[in-house]
Amino acid sequence: MSPRQIDPTLGPQLVEAAARLLAEEGPKALSTRRLAAEVGTSTMAVYTHFGGKGDLVRAMVREGFSYLNRSLTEVRESEDPVADVAVLGWAYRRNALEHHNLYNVMFGGSVLGSFSLADEDRQHGRYTLETLIRAVGRCMETGRLRPGDPQSVAHQLWIALHGLVTLELGGYLIPPNDADTCFEAQVGGLLMGAGADPAQTLASLERARGRRT
Image 1 (cartoon, rainbow, N blue to C red):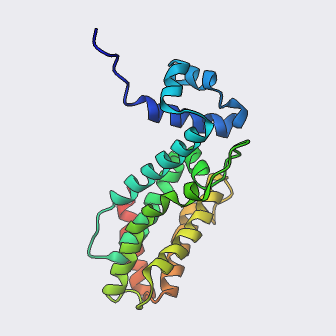
Image 2 (image 1 turned 90 degrees about the horizontal axis):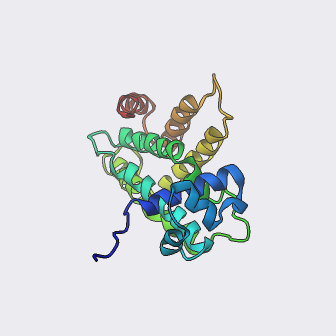
Image 3 (image 1 turned 30 degrees about the vertical axis):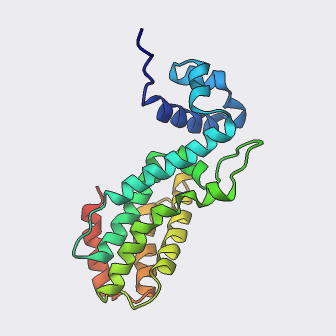
């Protein structure tokens, strides 16, 4: 008899279900039996993938950043690096909206009960910033931004965008100051503060708007 094949989609299914249960019902819902029932598998299969709650939470963090990295690296570089920065912002927002439960776990927005994220967990996703840092660097190399530290500017953009996304997920941004309007004003203002020409920046934001899908 050949060995039973492990479903390669089961791990991601369990992670998504765990993030949803955590958001909807809190950490008490993260029992092995409940999680197995959610995806139609056995408790043994859950233990096979995750030895305990700590492993499960770490898997949620890593899966969430994997989704984010995929969204950002799918953005193609163009001849307009300022537009590329804005498109990366759109991709960041879209990923957070599509995977909002995982997003909350990634950045410590979910109540985890007796388990807490370690420094290693919190710093795990920093590799996803590389795409933005590279785009900001191209802005400086082409003269669209004044010379400086691309990591510093990328971090400022990330910090501001994370705040916007948190409010957007909470439903706090409504017309006339809806998320799209605030996003463009926020990104444009930060880039102009880093030396971008106002008229060129507005043109770049318009180009980015056409690429947002």
